[in-house]
Image 1 (cartoon, rainbow, N blue to C red):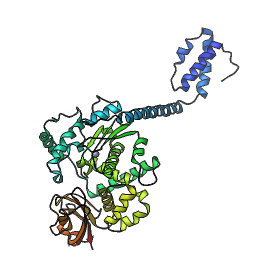
Image 2: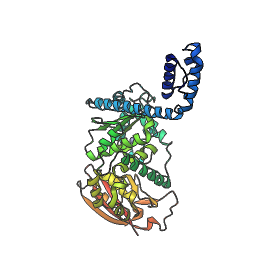
Image 3: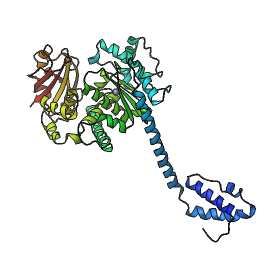
Image 4: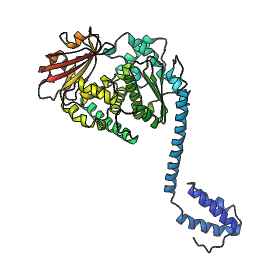
Length: 439
Ligand SMILES: [Zn+2]
């Protein structure tokens, strides 16, 4: 710009305005500035603007700066909204019948239509869960759909029928797909914990949730053990305070945080005990696997990791994990079995029937699910024992296991092996059995 150019004060003022507009990232109209000064000032102003354009900050960095500013403003707004939501959650009352509606109110998004039910919401009907109490679980679950789904909540039987139909839509992941998913979720958990500065167990989930702008409260909700509502930016979580075990509440919170990390575009989740044990429906499987990794990330397992990988899982090892990481026995056992390079399985039974299981990655066969545990097993004997009682057995593996549908690439037939069982009965009648194949 030529400093010698003679410009009136008015033209200089207009030039400064024009410059400010450019810096703000606007695209000012040159003609509109020219029109605001006298005819004799127009040519010098036009020339000055042309010079200014040559040295003015390029529009791209200005836009980038604006985006940064905008994201800072949004972050501040979200933090304020989170703090308001956290305050509103403190007012949670007894007898909360519509947790999703309450959470929407806390987030200030009442009346917004939630997305239609997720895949998970349709799914309640697994052979292991075909129990009368599932009806009472399914009925409150319909709050999940808000007004997005024409479910008649006065007809729980109809709801279950509908879910049975929906269950057919589920696609099960293959073993290879699960292994790939687990690697991906390992990365995701490590990244999340690193980003929020978590470096020692037990992982402080409440402050992790706060860092992610998730308001959390415990509330006397019944069938759902955990609910998450999110608008994609921030979220609010209710954890059922009627759950007796604090470690189970902890897993539930990790599960809801995992939904926020992975599925924040989904709007709402209401998780009953069925979802929290669901390792087949895509979204619930993802949330459960990530929850386990948020609680017990490989990086924090550190010197335990070689043992967990090379030794067969055992209750004594799991008890150590439970204490150090403040996780439930089931969460610890599941994680151990998945980490183990020994061929093994965790079998969970209730009243003598296998209701859930976990397999080591290379087990090469299936667990006999929804069937009675072997009559000669300790698991069968422990049904009538007291909490904490333990026992074991050695039985042919085929008594616990059946051939895999997928072709096994194991070099030896796992069903021909002997299965060493170690079982423990828990307070609420659940029996956990670790099955380790002896070579
Ligand atoms: Zn869930």
